[in-house]
Length: 244
Image 1 (cartoon, rainbow, N blue to C red):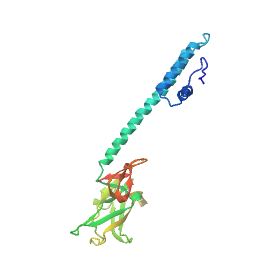
Image 2 (image 1 turned 60 degrees about the horizontal axis):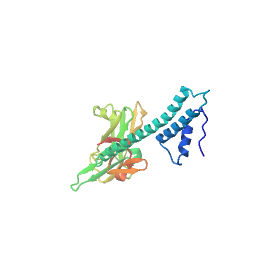
Image 3 (image 1 turned 90 degrees about the horizontal axis):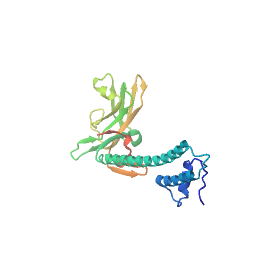
Image 4 (image 1 turned 135 degrees about the horizontal axis):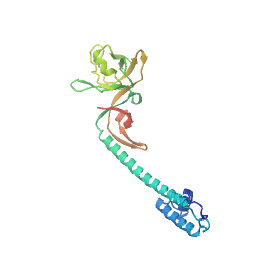
């Protein structure tokens, strides 16, 4: 079956698409569509009514339509290439993070501090912290053991000259010395949980607890690559709040 085209009838994108569909029954590139379009256009010019010839504006319009299709295909290829390069660059950046420590949201990955000791009995703890959306007048941190017993409380407020930096908006991280309220090292090793609260002019502020994790590797998933954080799980780059 042939393609019927009325003389002097503008050839739009749908006609060009129909030509592509009927040709060999396979998807056509913009170049194939353009060749078919030009063949039909030449046929139109040869068979047009001499008393009612195609106007220059009509010819220009039809050529512009097919040029637009070709331009869109080239643009899609260019964008696809750029996206591919960006994905490769992001993957390389993530690979460079393997072995490094990061701070991620405690809401999503658990607000934990890990306490351990070496053979000499020296205590070490993993970093922890928080993120403030805006400055605070006071910040309170409570550390509890696995039984829920409070072992240490820390407070930063405007009256303490040394607390100023911990009240500013942004990310704050530090290391607990592993000592309780009496100044003694905690005896239990393992995971301790912490909570953080903040206020400004007696109004409670939104605060995000942050926990430490180490990047063990890169995991490829359907929606892209993620950071492998071992027992903590996996995280996207936009979930990382600080690199240590």
